[in-house]
Image (tube, rainbow, N blue to C red):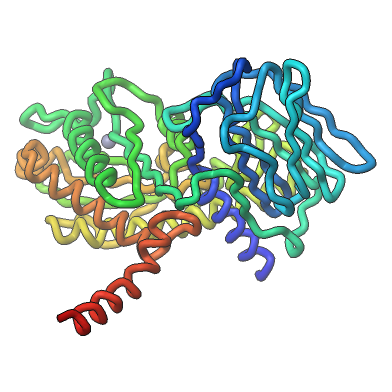
Length: 416
Ligand SMILES: [Zn+2]
């Protein structure tokens, strides 16, 4: 059991650390290069090391893997170093040292290695939070459960800790209205209002940032919602819905997580498609692993995500209980596609029954939408303060909470 729980911890830490923001803007780079490297980040995982270069724009590059000594040579066309980026500190995973030099029209980056590795590189397209990133993955080939390096060395990143990213997913939208109440209320409209309110509250919370999977009345596929959360490197995915049932007397909210059956369906899908998937599970690429190892890694990541989902869902359910009727007092399990991300804890909140006339009316009321959003926000906050991912501002705030209170008391006592 020991190596397993260690591995889960590492995977989780990797999940937690991937979104560390960087973009050391600062100096207006006076350079003729088309593209500048703004930051270099390194992560060491249980069976690989990832190097991420934040670029100011698209660039082509070439990668060579050389021996004696083991090193990776990366040439980026038309690139220069941005202000504040120099070499990188030694000792992150397989990378002993990072050297950089401008030669001709290109920037050469050399990763000195302490062992032979396999290397892959790709250019990641910009998303809402990050620009172009050149990603180099170094894998050791065979994973060693016991001898893995601890993450994490963030080089030239912002010194402060990162914000948690919460993906807020308003169900349905566009041509898909979702459930429709007797009075004509459409699920897609009320859940968007609640999602927006929730996102605002999360954004106002120190150390947290919300991203909406849809921000207007348009259709987004379930897989695209998951992709969006993944692209934003979300720490948690919360889908907002309103339920409907033939019996109009039924009311109350419920919270769902993915069922084990749904998780195993998804595992088969990932394993079947891993050859052409560049996605990482918990920071680990599956496409170069043999079947057994890939399924073990996936299973560990899914189990960790599912248990985190359950704890987070319980916190949300507890808060919803204070707003109104709860349909089911336990967290429910179902095979909802949108909850299937193997490494993002995910939950689906059925805020109320839109088929119940009383609840339909409440769902339309802005004050009630705000109460539901506040309950979900408080549940999410409680969960993260109780289980803060390492390297986040919440982790600092959570540990700072006690000493600060003590200091306040001491200051009050000595004050005149
Ligand atoms: Zn729905």
